[in-house]
Image (tube, rainbow, N blue to C red):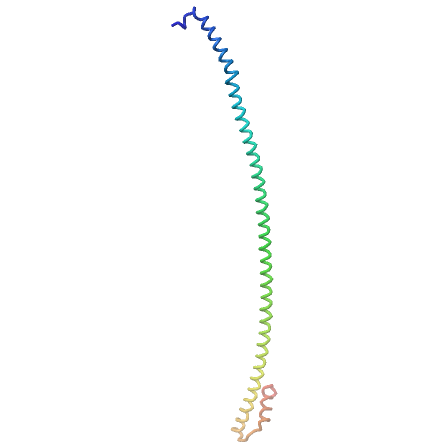
Amino acid sequence: MPQLDPSGFAPQIFWLLICFVALYLLMSRVALPRVTDVLRERQERIDDDLEKAARLKAEAEQVLAAYEAAMAESRGKALAVLREAGERMAAEAAKRQAEATARLDRQTEEAERRIGAAKQEALNNVRGVAAEAARAAAAKLIGTDIAAGEADEAAGRALRGRG
């Protein structure tokens, strides 16, 4: 093998050095700057994307805070409306209760008045019936007819408890 022949080492080392220097210069002057540019552009794009993501995150947090504030305000308004409706309904119920109580009081007074009138009428009828019964009993027992006024007066005394 000619590569292993020691007499050919000097020209091989010479060409190795020339190829190495040529490749080194080619890589350092052409390829590596292009790779560096690509890496720098990529890093700038990544940094821009990160900045944009941070801005969007901040905007999203602001929107979320505004949304939560709007929801809290809406809940407060809804509670106020519910409270107001409850108070209005309670006042209306109290008003209806008062009207119903007043109407029942009037009806009770009217019924008591009618009961009193009916009681008085019944007592007057009982007095008349008692006077008639007394006249009839006296006519059967003693055989005489008592005057209507006397029988009425006796029935009235009996009803009042004077006997």
